[in-house]
Amino acid sequence: MHQYGLLLENIQDNGEFINDCVFTMMHHIGGDVRQVSTLFQPSILKCFTRIWESDFELCDDWSDLIEYVIHKFVNTPRKTAILPEVASMGKVEDSLSNNRNTEEKN
Image (cartoon, rainbow, N blue to C red; front, side):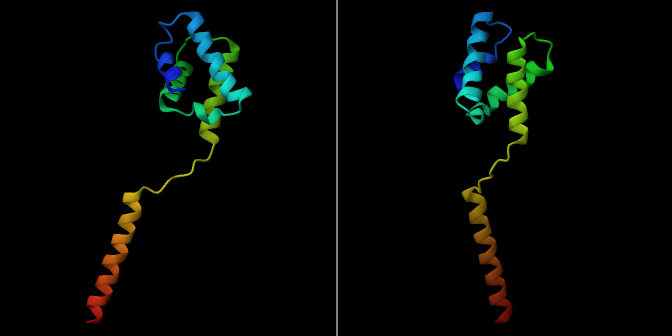
């Protein structure tokens, strides 16, 4: 999908055939294959937003696809991963706190 997102960056310079192929593939991924989250890539979302906010003429199907993907992205809960650095910082803070408590007792 990343490559399709790169193609969309030049939507105004692409021919109608290229744009139609890109949107058709994305439609299959988001609809037929039911993997809309595959389209939640920064390059694709950025292009979709730019297209949505511009006056670029699209057929209704492609406008619907853009609206659907953006809507799903905004309304799909995402799990936030705890980065190893953040997790280890918590351990460091706990360790410092324990050391302070031990020092205060002595």
